[in-house]
Length: 569
Image (cartoon, rainbow, N blue to C red; front, side, top):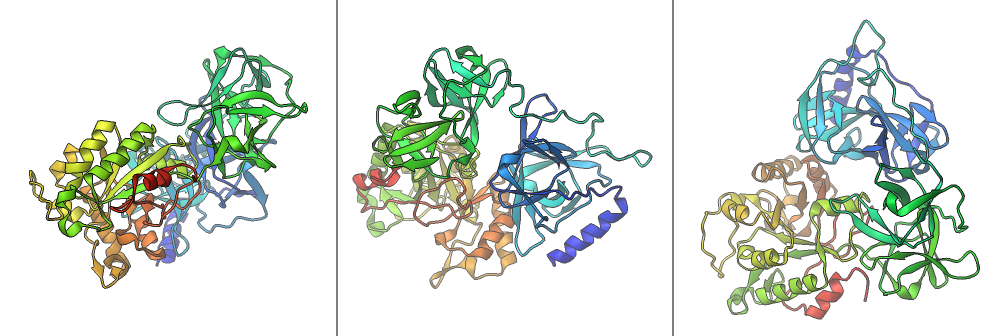
């Protein structure tokens, strides 16, 4: 059926075609690659291309950049993340210029899907605020052209915007609204000199989150390779597959480097270490002696280039740095804790030794430990960005989730979380919450659902996501979600969004799911899903099979401490 719809859509578009772009040059993306727009005079991220996907190139811009079509304009992709291949692997080709009047504008990072196969396959992401012409609309999905590929984005992620016809039959069509093509970027763009030298100990910042994160300190007199001069305040250097920034007032530009320990930042693995010692300096070993050139932070994750005997090698600013294995631990990823129901010890009754119930005292002790150790409670949105390798998170990060939307979280969890300034996520069975009475009294003998009034009261701590509308039931030993027709699952998930329209995350009831359920979750518009599989979460892990941990009435505080540690103890 999908193929028939696709062919009909393609035939409808044919009468409006003015030009079809053809190119013999095709690239494959080796790892997620950022798409940049440089019309403002500096590089601005406008999206990403997914790993493993192929794309036609509109122009080869020398040794460093490919030009592609992006939202009616041009985008630029770093060649280092790509490989030239003989042919494209996709079938969702669409004409590059058609008669288009209206647009979508991404309200958040928006996944773009190819639906020509048996399931939705993400092949790109549009950055927040980026505008794309609408080629079609089917139900909750918009069709757009991404570099000559027909992609679909869900209406939960975009706003529709009325526009003007961007074609003129009397003139040669262009692929962007302005007649002047953008100046191609160079590598490194706008770099006045090749290297920088620290005039004093200078902090290197990661600027991808709301607040700058200090990643390392470049020691006075030490040098790094420049990637770009961003503005009057910062200079950019590479760090693994991303960038760090140093204040321009704390460095000087030099033409020739004094160091010889050059390294390939882009060659780092998807494996990280965490410093655990007070002496966190990384060393240059090229002169047959250990020369420190930067100091690392104890609450950060650092990409590993390789290991040499008892030394780990990382890279910052084009330099290889060595740190002894005794001073670091291997990062195992971000833990996500799963909670359900809370009662006082004398209230347990029939909930005694039930794995989904814990005492208020135990929960208070666990949260106090997290506060004392300065853990950052991370939102599900930031976890998604971390798993997409769009940001880094502190080593001591944790995600707190609460399943079923129970009133006991208002009584016993919310006050503690609020007191510590923590944030958390509730996964709601929204049918129960929709009909839960306002101003209800807590009854420890029963399982009560939060009301809309309760949700509003606790929104300074909790965000609310979906645990289905009304599919949280067991039939025998299987969840109802696995036993009903596919379209009924999708309908239920979409109905849950009518109660919590801003939800983007989903938790599988009883942790049960299969490939069809994952597909339904995606079709309903969710960008991530949580399982009950134990483990930790790392960049490039499956965002629809996020792992979680839990503690119950038998879990000691010592066990909890080991469980949430960013490294094995």
